[in-house]
Image 1 (cartoon, rainbow, N blue to C red):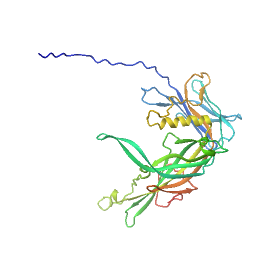
Image 2: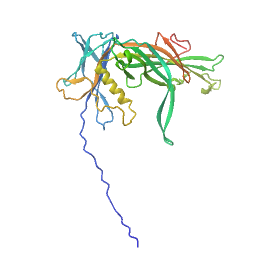
Image 3: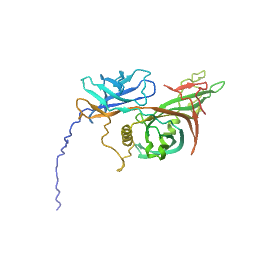
Length: 361
């Protein structure tokens, strides 16, 4: 005899009780010794179940104040984006702080930041590098792909300057495209601008960790060859009498001829360095058990009326040095490097049949 026992059970959903986290203000901004318009960004963090992680914080009154009593006012040019007037700059040796008043009358200060002198960049060059990324395919699942490209490297002597530095960069990719037009082929010079893609900064360095405070061969960022080899579709085509193009896209010759890189090096205070170093480690953690990740990075902003209120972000003061180079990945382990004196500030892709004045081979 076989006895079959049937167990019936009901599924019950358990919803854990989670303390709701109030929205927190997040500030980000700095003033530099470069003449221009300086920006402070203010946003609000949202709960985990919200559709948007951050909400722009509008309606604030924001000033930048120095320890000599000078006040630089701002205006909200875009939601949550507060700009000083044009042609304003900080002074090395002065201390600065941000003062922001919410629409409800709450006042937020940053701690004072000393604007220290930044070391000049001695060299910028590139080395061949490879980087593994994890991709997903519905058929094969997760798989690794190896990218080849250029590791941008810089060196500077920080003795007598701020030993703490933060780095950003701008790029201009150069490509040539030859169209088989008649009676002669048409050559197009194409310059494609790109900017720091990793949350407004790419790396930090501490000169105190190097011999004689000489930052040597600091890796700023990796630029893979996929970004270099982007073909731009030019709408101009020649048609035959029947209205069909006289050439196919595959007939267009494409040449990647390197890129221009402008490295910006910012001086930091020791506290500012620790903040940005923690941000860098958190954003670049690979998920390994021993990754040095901090659970809460607050910064240097506080509320005057309630010092227990959680406020995130950082306001800093920096001087800036920069250097521009031309880099070309010719083949494996072979990078062409040339220092350039002029870096074009392009707001959009430049397509020209004439050789641009900044073009470098």
